[in-house]
Structures are given as C-alpha cells and as structure tokens.
Amino acid sequence: MEKHPDLGALQPKIKYYREKEKFEYAGAGGGFMDKWGYLFCRGRIFFTLEDDLGQYDDHVETFWAGGGCMFVRADLYHLVGGLDRDLYAHMEEVDLCWRMKNHGFRIGYCGSSTVYHIGGSVISYGSPQKIFYNYRNSLILLYKNLPLARLLWLLPWRLVLDGVSGARAALKGDWKEVGAILRAHGSFYAQWFSLVPKRLHARSLVNRPRMSGIYKGSIIWDYFVKGRKKFSDLPVGKLMQPLD
Image (cartoon, rainbow, N blue to C red):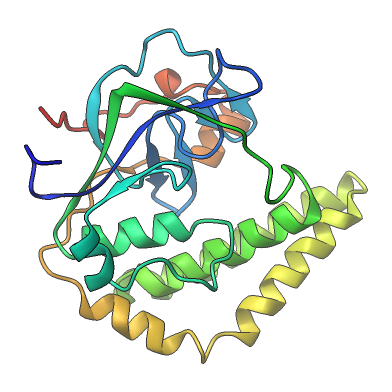
C-alpha cells in the first residue's frame, strides 16, 4: 500500500477455514464483475471452489476486495462514505470498492499473504436469507454505482435475468428460492426513492474512474452453459494488471 499510493484497498488470499486447501467464497483469489454486473472470484465461481495449488500467488489489480479481510486507506474510506449499512452482510465491500474505483483508485490482491475465513457464520450459504440479500443487494449495487446511460438498459435486463432464475427455481420446485427472489425485488422497489440520495452521492465521487477488473463476457453463460467452472477456463484476456 505504501509502494502504490493509488491503491484504495487490498485483500490477501482468502481460504476456507474448514477445508484449508480450498479457496473461500468471500474474496478467494480476488474479486471481479462481469458485463452484466454479476460477481465472481478467482478460485470461486458460483458453486465451485478451487484448491489452492499456487495458481494465484501473484499481486494483481481486481475489481473488488473481499470484506472478510481487507486493508483500506482510512482517509479514502471516510471520503467515499464508508460501508453502506443498508447492504447488510452482503456486497457492502463491493459497493465500497466501486466508489473508490470511481474516485480514481485501484483495488488489489496480494497473493503472498493468506488468511483463513470461517464463512457462513452470519448467514448460512444457500439459505433463503442469503438468497434474498444476494438478489436485493446486487440490484442496489448496480443502481447506486452505474453511470446513467448504462443503468437504463442494464438494470431492466438484470430484472429479466432474475425472473429467469426464479422460473428455473420454480421448475425445480424450490419455492423458498422463488419466495426469496420475489421478496428481494419487493424490497428493492420499496427502497427506490430512499436510494436516490445514495446514488447521487456515489455519482458525485466520480473522478477519473478506473474500471479495470470487469470481465467482458457473461459469467452465467460461461459457467452454466459452456461448463467453465474455473477461472483458468475463462477467456479473460487483459482482465488483470499486475501491481508490481
């Protein structure tokens, strides 16, 4: 952080405390976002956790840093408004990193440092509550931080994709997931007007934004249709830039 004054936040390698050879959901080997606003990590894409074989021992620029363990510049943290308490327990660190990036700072990953994260201790993985926050907070994240020209077409498209996801859950008979998705959308719509000041504040911070770390493909299409389960399977191109 001292070597790179334009780094706003930095995360270590985050591994799973209960299975120490594996990466953990919350950050893993660095966080990224695809062109539709879906989040994923090196070492963890949806339900697939990779074993740590030294493949992510590098130092690279990412889109977001995992909130389970992150090093943050205090002055910048307060300048951009800190963590949003309304994004309870899910994606609040992504929102923070996005505001930092919009303000011209980079987010990084330090693969020479390792921590072990218990994971699922606040909200259990796969629970209806987790699904609710996943869908609702994802919409809030996009609404707060996207430039207007992109928001106008991307947010409606995400609502459609959420509907497809809900239909898929209904076909499987998973009515708890369907209910969680419906509640997430209802909560998002109910907060629409109260989110306007937050969006205005977030957009007021925009100053030479650095949008590196956005994957040009669709992580959903790659994972569920093309069967690309690991980060190394993705055509990432110049997604990452080295910090050194």
